[in-house]
Amino acid sequence: MAKCFVCGKQRMAGQNVSHANNVTKRLFKPNIQNVRALVDGRPKQVTVCTRCLRSGKVEKAVRGMRTTATA
Image (cartoon, rainbow, N blue to C red; front, side, top):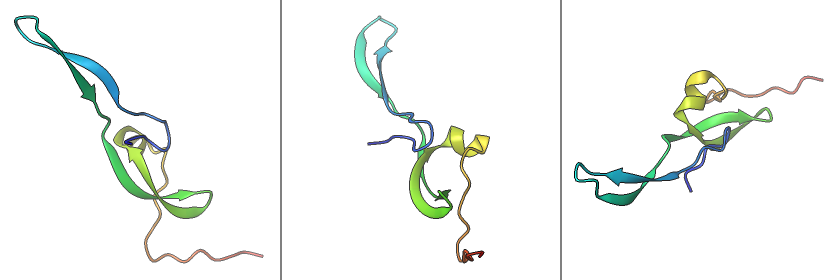
């Protein structure tokens, strides 16, 4: 299911309303993207909405970067 890992945004139900006022059901889907992000300091593949990406709520993981353990 399309759901944001950060804010929990998911699909919503609504209606198409024509000029003649005919009503049919429809779904509003959030813009969900697959992102490699840091979750608890480790890179993880998560699905995030573009609003969370744009607002900086997600820290992207850099590819090829080794995490060094500091003692």
